[in-house]
Image (cartoon, rainbow, N blue to C red):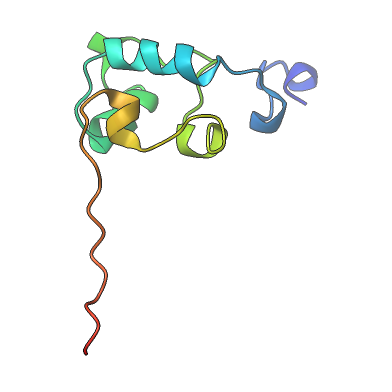
Length: 91
């Protein structure tokens, strides 16, 4: 469709992305520190960091779910993990 419309867009499911390891190396070099910064970068709101390459997914958690993904802290290289706020059980 993107070819026909002249936009060059390719459906996410049809794109060829970098391997998880190669994409993670690229992203870590950006020096992003949080999901918020990743979100800004992927939307092009951090021009000093450049634009997201077409071969790196905007939602890496989905694309790399069974290919090495272990959280945003690992993806960005911060080592931070998300703390789940689940209700405590009464005993």
